[in-house]
Amino acid sequence: METKAQPKSGWEGTVTARIRAATPEQAWSLLKDFCSLHRWVPSVRTCHKLEGVDGQPGCVRYCGGPLNRSDPTQPTGWSKERLLAVDHAGRSYIYEIVETNKGFARYRATFAVAPDPGCAGCCLVWSFAADPVEGWTHQEFVAYLEKLAQGVAERVEAEIGLGIASADG
Image (cartoon, rainbow, N blue to C red; front, side, top):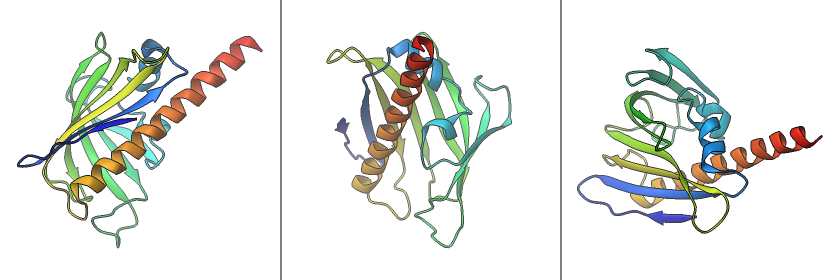
């Protein structure tokens, strides 16, 4: 896993996680659904469409889970996120947080699946630009995203592995 993080006036960073068991096309076929984050990110317990057309710019999803570091008194950390752009050929989408109780003022991210020249698989690339997040340092936030990206990679590898085992069996 590689990390690039260069804070400027706000926070920016990119985390990368290898998905060895999947081609970029296989991984994207699983990850392209904007409203399926709960299947791939271990700390997201629910993710569903609130408005718009799923997978189309303007779609807003609700994501919720047990983590709320900015306000530990809250039983659930949640956010509403708007899909801004989708590039199926480039295997990426851009989204932003529009409302949350997790301490974000501004957060915009690109979630992409790219070929990995270092192996037969692919890489998950998650880049973001944000205002500082309440309750976090920049370094802690990047480390948290690294952990999320690695969790996504592990779940995709397991899903692809199960699909291959099912096809063989």
